[in-house]
Image (cartoon, rainbow, N blue to C red):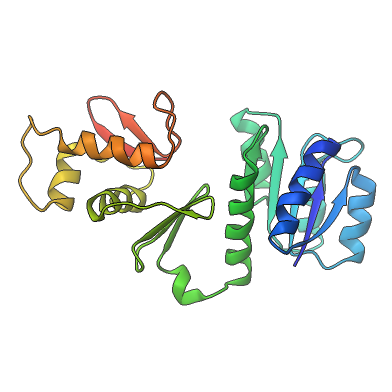
Length: 226
């Protein structure tokens, strides 16, 4: 598969190339927008990784050009910007995903694979059982969980908690609801079992305790995955 990488920061473009090449992808790497646009017209592209802040024609404009050409391969935007309006702009003009610099190359790799799976509709039956959240992949049927392509060993209870929250992504789930749905028993206010298990799950996901990426605590209410 051909992956186009555009970033005027040579070190970043080269780093992305190294990680993607290890996975067997063919990389079309460019440091300027003109050469990238020429390649889009000339080559078959399966996915593009575009830096927003490049000279002449920025990543947003290139994204628009790609979509105006009726090319529907996945586009992942890279940027140093962190404002929500920039993310909204990128997604509204046809980008599929958005990563803020600095980023974890393994997370980018996971997102590339996720985007390509969706694009090629690879193994449709398997896809129905997968929940993918920013590098975290939960396979309900096989009872497996991968973080940046590395399998995480959860106990059955831990897996069920994570799966329940992931299926209700964006919703706040109370400790009471989690306990009664996962343990199938009545919840008591003094029961801190859920809190202990959430802490163990976070540890296995290498979560930042002050600012967890996956399982958020909504104080006085419960937990959620954004």
